[in-house]
Image (cartoon, rainbow, N blue to C red; front, side, top):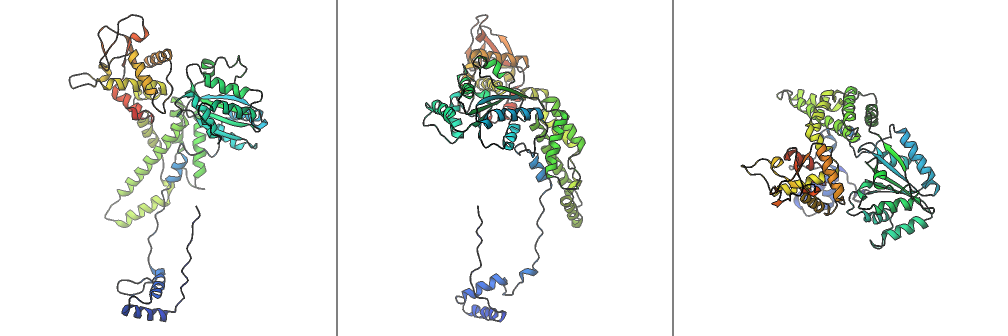
Length: 493
């Protein structure tokens, strides 16, 4: 927004003798000579006693220099774009080849990109698109907020600035655009596994549109699952619309160190010592690579370690003898002027890693996928109505929920706005079995007359899948803490 600068009012300049005369006249007639008084104030401010003060001789306070950590913490934030893509040469070449054979030639095609969270899938793809010299339109659609798979048609049209006339006609309008457009365009569907439904009709239509002979759609689907196309879209190969597959493996130690160092170098002062010790960076990289290889976690660890070191430095400055004000001021000046003396050491990194990793149970719960956490939300919702009293055991031991009741509550939660579509009953049982294998829940045969959650009773028909009962194998408080960390699930608790 342009800044409008106001010019001084066109008031005639007066000599110092004229100004003195105006002061005397003003004292006798305060309502006169308004213009002269205004000119006087803008030149020499007048104190309460009428004496003039030269602005040039007034002492001004020195502005406090911002903390040297601010730029570094900003560079280490996960939302800050990387200055450059470090590593991933093979993946970059695959993406470039796909773009050169599809959208850059005006043709359609599809690619499926898989990999664990924090492996650089979206960032690498967006960086390659920016490097492309061909002028083509590209849009990114996040599928998580979509409540129904069919809403993706309207979402794509809106992203392309061609909103659909109605939800019912969105598919036909998208087909017309894909098959009649003069220029090819690229659509990136992030978290494409959120579009999984009962028969996967939406995903089949999208990949078939991209594979059409006259298609101008280059489609890229991004998700975590490596085998999504094989498990849920087995007919793609038979329909000759199988996408190019590209998997991003978790980052290794050297990759994480190189990426972190690249971000630090982008804001480093020339000739200054590094704020984060090299050994501390390597410790962070080794711990993250050993657990998940998630670069976002490494960034969070370094940023929190930076904040811890900054707080420690401030406490050390305050501990200076308060009676000696000069010494305290010198310590503050040294803190501001010598950022190199503020170091993030191995101890800072180790402290943050300990607080983030927590107990093995917390790590186990954090590793659950979103659908499994929805199952825990359903369990927590049913168990809440049977909350323990001082004479009862904790909910983890006493609340036993029937699988049928748990699935009904799960479907009810998924029907809320901005939630994923529910999986089928068979897939739900697979989720519960997987959670049992991970040691999160216990699945046991139900007994006649056993009370299940909100006052329900379950039948005792042996062999029926829904006749089984589920209870937590971990403490209920740990479950709630893990679910509260997921922003979309916290309001449900």
